[in-house]
Image 1 (cartoon, rainbow, N blue to C red):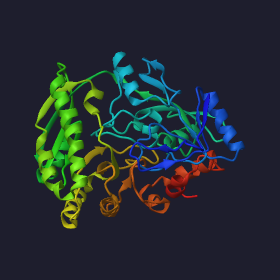
Image 2 (cartoon, rainbow, N blue to C red):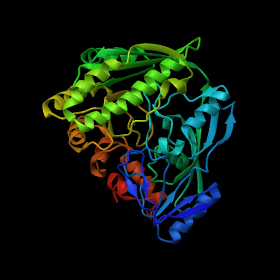
Image 3 (cartoon, rainbow, N blue to C red):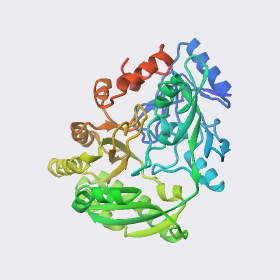
Length: 442
């Protein structure tokens, strides 16, 4: 096990650059036994413990001045069970690696978020999701979990276990790092399939007027609205009998790298230096990407490279409230004189049965607002958050928000169930940090 003392120079920073921490020590365990030993030793030393994946959360959910567990050596596929149609993976495995390994075996996850850089435990613990009419977040595809508890014991839980195991399973799929350190996850998988993606521009008002129909007619529907314009880009993904027709190499490079990352990066730099140019840039950006259709294996359709760094806030509102919420957001931007250079992303998820899932018990629509890294975002996010919370919005656990336990207990019917379980599993609050103290209460 490699342990780096990080008090001198070991400042940890997240991907968005808005969170930093100086842990007393960083530990990279190579086995579940080493991780359990690190947890026990931290408790003996009176230090808090947090695990961190690739740092893609914009909140301080993984920050600690105690022991920071880096799980990159706990990576790889443990087993594939074709009769049960499951795959068990180590917690530190990047989603990218899981997707590629499954595809080689002729298998796939049912749904994915829009990037795959995160570790499986980081992505699921914070509720990472894509968009889907019937298929929900990555955590909703979990069949079983293994985690190290505060006393160093290894717990396993699944949907089919004892009453206590089922209670742990209901909560730990999106556990916020509050219940223990996840060491392995078993996902449901299915035979590899093809998706046809249809991307096309559509006026903002048309998307909202036809939203219910677009949602009902497509397995996966999402869109991006460009502030300061009445334009959106829509994307519909549906299962396909084939044939495979991937995006051509040149077209893919031009649209996904040159336009969506290269030109977009330059546009963000210009917008940050000269905010008055933002509306004109937004009008150009919203027209730059033309309509296209392609067919490929799921993860190549669901995910895309994101090289332009940003800070993000995302809220889940009841799906029925989407159009009203988005119109209020648009009116606020137009009224405020703010300059917003990043598109607003809109996705959906069906209700699920995970205690603190943003879609727990209700069909949800997600609205994500972004700002280019280094651009002041507080005024925009504060105004957006006021709108989202007026619609009983639930903040994404890994994205910027200011909500506390008092608010969250109102919008999550099963909030008390989660905190009671935490009292049983971590009574001494070994896995506590400032973020969990705020969102779960002391």
